[in-house]
Length: 300
Image 1 (cartoon, rainbow, N blue to C red):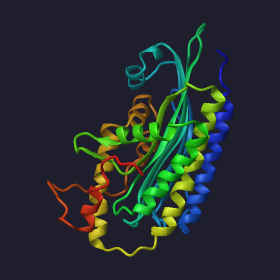
Image 2: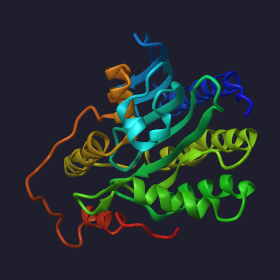
Image 3: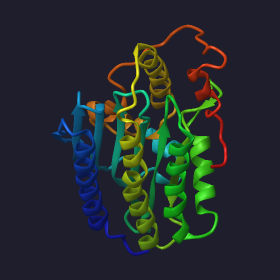
Image 4: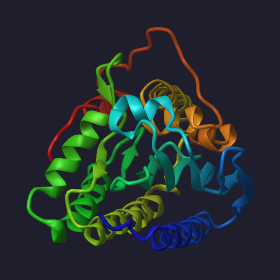
């Protein structure tokens, strides 16, 4: 099997990071991303960009990383035993945005490419990624818009693609110990190599570019909605669920830490503030109780 053109994937990812940062700065209207370039001791590095204390975004990070090495981390070989003994190369853009206003949902997106090689054998490669939305005070219009963008970008790639990757997202972003989804989902795909390389790459590009189309209109609609201390405290409480998922279940976090990635960049997905409260329950019929009706998979 011919080796895929890794350079064109890298070029797209670097450009995607630039476009997303520029658009989010414009949406915020006050703060700018600060870049922190870093090198990985075992090979590779990346560009971490963080925006803090903006007018709209309390903290957000948009990371590009490109790492490589001679030995696979344990999290990868446990998932794919055939990768043992292969050199690897992994690159991607990953982002999480935590807004100030509890009426603006938290959002996450990630697109990535992975290749593992061994002398005399065909390379093993795949794409992965997706995006998902985590509202605190969900609005039906926003959730439907988010999923409509996801469905539309999947349409050129065949019947059933949206349904498959929407369902995968619902399964993946599920907190088993809480018996609830992290939010209202979106798309999630991994190990994508069933199509020719160029088609897989095109799908990854569509997902990466679709994130802004899905998220920007929601920011604009909700960023000026009034809120008080009650809403703020509920937002911080629900952010705790985000932390729980990322530290317990997220494969990207585990891969990054086990492959010797930069800890500050890997954990930039964490919210700047969060809280936990023992056995808290929303008041029946309250605005906070509405969220719990959304934390189970549904058709949009």
